[in-house]
Length: 89
Image (tube, rainbow, N blue to C red):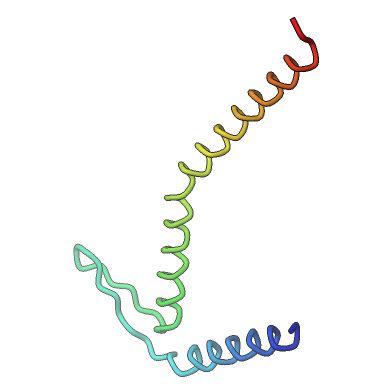
């Protein structure tokens, strides 16, 4: 199973490497106010992919911190219930 997984990884890496080598022509990305960015196509694709990944992670931060707060609250409640079970009134 590990050999199949490594084979898939190597295949994907070689596929992306070939894609990168085939897309080295410079292209222009036009932004607002006549600003342009000229770079090889693969650099632009990778930059926008990385930017999208960063924006996606930032969008999840609120949810992650909210869930961490809820977990800590639930842990405190469990500790309180265990403490009340140990010392009966």
